[in-house]
Image 1 (cartoon, rainbow, N blue to C red):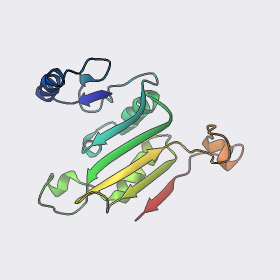
Image 2: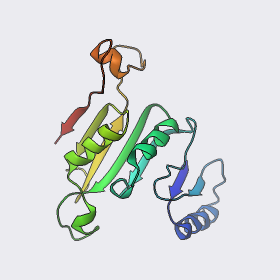
Image 3: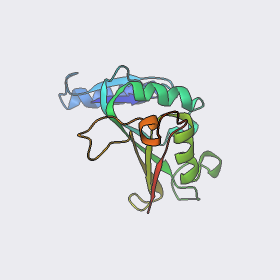
Image 4: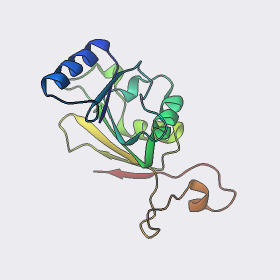
Length: 163
């Protein structure tokens, strides 16, 4: 597991907990990186989780491009963001976005094809499940946007699931 954090003090606290638990680098690697750096490269990860950070990433295109490059197919990405309403916990409303806008941003700034949003799973938060398209009858082969939409097709498609 690779834990990527944006604050040096959080990285130090995780390192201390890791040592306390007797975990080696073969079980947990901790990386402190600036906001906007996914902290992984070259198909290094099977999946990724982003907790309450996506809205604040300035260059979403660069971030998602580097995130995808660091993940193995089908590039499972799970994001959790705050619901776009005032809640007892969480940031001010100025730092929140509607779920459909977050899904649109993922589509606009990446090559991901499947995005689902689930708002009843975790109180006051939305869980986004994001991955590349998988052909259920294709034996796990990668299907790109042109294959789905025909030769000469531009853009990509997005499956939206809302509960």
